[in-house]
Amino acid sequence: MADRPDTKASASPRLLSSGPGEHDPQALMRIKNLTLRARGVVEGFYTGLHRSPFHGFSVEFSEYRPYVPGDDPRGLDWKLYARSDRYFIKRFEDETDRRVYLIFDRSRSMGYRTLAYTKGEYAVTLAATLAYYMTLQRDSVGLLTFDDSIGDWIPARQRPGHFRQLMIALSRPLAGSGTDLDSPLRQLAQRITKRGLAILISDLLAPIDQLRMNLGLLRSRGHEVIVLRTLDPGELRLVIPEPTTVVDLETGREVPLDPATVGPEYERNFAAHREQVRVICESLGVDLYEMMTDQPLADALAHVVSTQQRRGGRTSRRGMLRSGTAGGAS
Image (tube, rainbow, N blue to C red):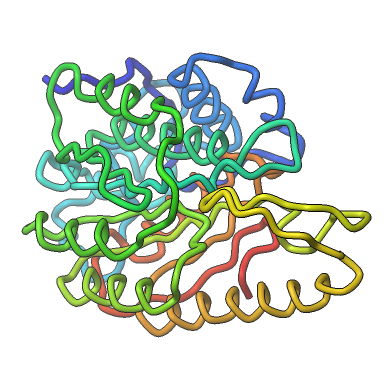
């Protein structure tokens, strides 16, 4: 029996994120226990579900999925249709046991912040939330962490103690320096032989060619890919009010900076990089969402679930680029 959080939901697979102001990230980050944080986000997400057809009884959320054209009608649950007036397919064990791989950026650039918490703290909570949710779904969840080299590699499994192992790995402090997107994505593509879902959580502050080549490698092998680009609001525009010396988080290099002089150039370069990321993801059929660290984490969960629903659980070679609610790429 897989080790998974003991939570059931009386809810429809038709999901929406929690409303604005629910589960404020700043309040959430005050919770020291990572599992409790993740649980809080997921439970808040369930409260934001659209109206449930499952009135009067409790089911595990993973047992049903919406009917999509092409499904075998013999799998329809007619008793559920009588209750809800909507078509659902009963999900069997081979459908629910999907392999999900979280690819998590632990480079020092993730330590940047203009809020009370860093991008890394927000991203860790995001990864833990997805691991918690996917475990409830009976999916096999794996984890690969990286900075300028590979950190933890935990294969996707369902077994006692596995979820705890994921939480321990995610709780490690940032220790790397630069961001190397090449090695983790390439190694993941080589290590996983069965098609699955790869979710990259990173600020993507790395050479753009690495991103293009390795996302393309994952897609060419039939994997579905979602990118959750985690950014601090202060990265969109240079918010330094006066000339000062700044320190590069990844190299430690001190750089004198006059915001009046370099501000416009910084914003142009950031916008250009942002557009390159958007074009790459769109061309490869990778779903891209920008997650600003001042936005509810349940939004990311809603993005992932809506992507799965839109694709009907099928892995395609091309997909539609979608923008996050947090001022995502467009």
